[in-house]
Length: 234
View (cartoon, rainbow, N blue to C red):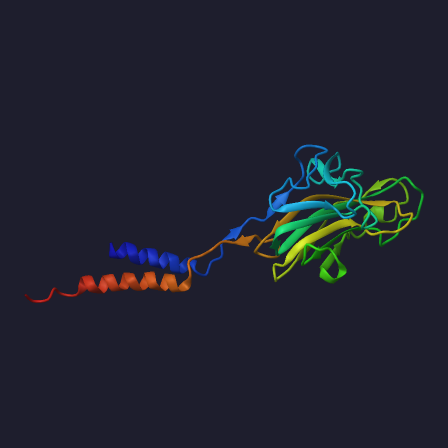
């Protein structure tokens, strides 16, 4: 019995310095087509930034994962920041979030502008404002042919991501930068987030505390010593 208790204490002590990793949550939007997803996923709320229409899925042959992309009731192509943007609010603050993005160059023969690219901005509040913004990531694939195209063109998929050591990301906004006349329209798919770990590496789960482990080890030693002491004379 003593050996078993000591072995258990040793195993727990060895585990004290290890951090168990929990997989981040990934949503690929590949459920029902053309469905309102405002509250379709536990822990998340999808909102139209302009308050017009709702967030929903769209079937797309060019989706990041086969099936759907995310858009609004009026369009799967997002642009002009507020008028065609989606806000994603987390019930619990997260430490890491990413989303896949691409853009479509339309058939209009306008010269595309370098700032008219998909973006994701992160906020430390459910209120989307410049004062609450933590940071921003923009689509960036060097040499993509769609960057210089002024005819119909689909760009490659890029990962937009943001992490916070304070685990205080409460919302993100996804869209394309506003620019009058630009033919680029942003498209999004595959949302991933992590509530605890940061950097997308997964969250941590509770581990036995060091004092508890020390107590177990000490208890094992105490039992061992008591059993080795000779019985007192009668």
